[in-house]
Length: 588
Image (cartoon, rainbow, N blue to C red; front, side, top):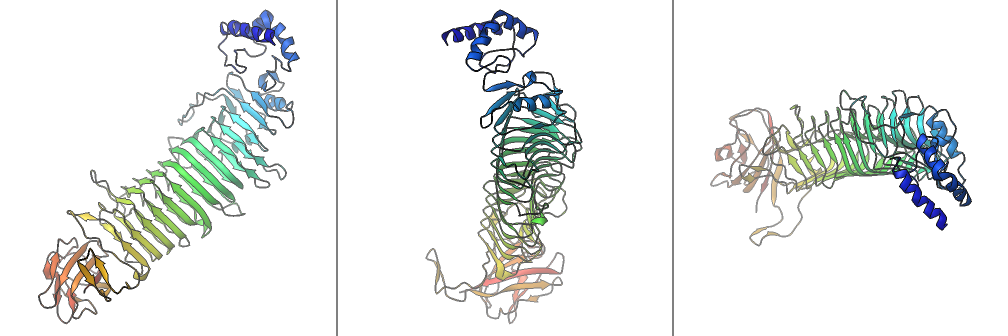
């Protein structure tokens, strides 16, 4: 053994002077059969061979842990890798090296055996300019799948794969087999690029068997117009620290991440998407089987999609999918930042940023959703199309929407077109809108006139206008308490609210009666549900009304807007009519 170590040391010194080939054996060795290899072999490797063979190794095929793909027969690099894998010992990890070489075409698709590792020089980099791709070391221009990992414990490391326009899959972790289960495969530090509109760069799916614990890690996907990563019929898929850039110019077709039927437990942590094409992420149910469930999406980025950035598709219906999207980014889309058209138990939160999208920041419109929670996000500057869209919009009569702790507005420094922080275009079976900063929207904080008051909880929102926030608070049902005390100064017994309803003003300069207000006194809070704005008056049937602070309701400019004659009346002096005003009187 001492003799072997001394000989290896001399080889390092000799090889370093004659080649810069990447080391695979902890010393530099040229590719087998090249002139430099022959020089080294004649100088000292011939004596090394006998020592290596005695220790179970070969300089031709590498040490027992490594096989050099180009040293095996085959008409292309794909056939050579497959032939190398055919010599692997069953039940042991087999490491196949594709050495540094000119770009090689795969014409025979590579199909992994169990425990196979294929490693290329790690040279990949993002390049989403069509036709450039200078880093590619492997190509596949067929119509099937370039590399399939259909069984267990495969590793594809460092390879950079360029795909032609007719390719189905670049890399497929899984297969159509009914007997092969794809478990614990890894694609690491790899690059896949190109393809056509029908291409999936990395597909993780076992429609007829089981896919479990498959991983895409620290990799780069670029210059695509189809799907970058797709997964269905899989469980516990891990996508960590990947950069995904669609083709930069003329791309309106790609999807960065497509999650379809029976994909369970998708874990995403670090998915940087640019030039997203059509969509950044789509969750849907189009392949039969069970619904996709339990997605943990963290640090996901969608940028510059031509339609909606992140989509929970209507095919999800009201399925309990249990998805979270935390620290997500949805910006620059031609549609909504996040579109929830189906699915239940969906949470958007923990620092997500939804900004400068052409339409609504977040749109909830499927009608069948149950439990959507939006919390602690920044939703700013949406409606860049200036076509009437808001920070958050609701339609279709969904169930159980909670919106809390967000900043929803335009940028104070540069303004914007975002109309409302929240606009409910339909009723909601339970809407909570609380503790949001909703300043700096064009029209107002929220338009919730379509929501039945008994289903609305609305409190603690800040909408600063001219230095003052007059945003009202609404609670469903009746406040039940013997005594309500605030800071020890204000005490009110049961019956704190007198009246509380909405009224339609049909003409200007004409008093409109507020039903049930005979003898009412205290504070009246009025909200313009049509044009937005609020006003607060102190009411006393004997001394008259007094406007508190300033009003930002068009047509209410002073205390003369309220009058008393067997009940309180309101008069608008300007602005469009008809107009709906909601009001409530708080009295002792």
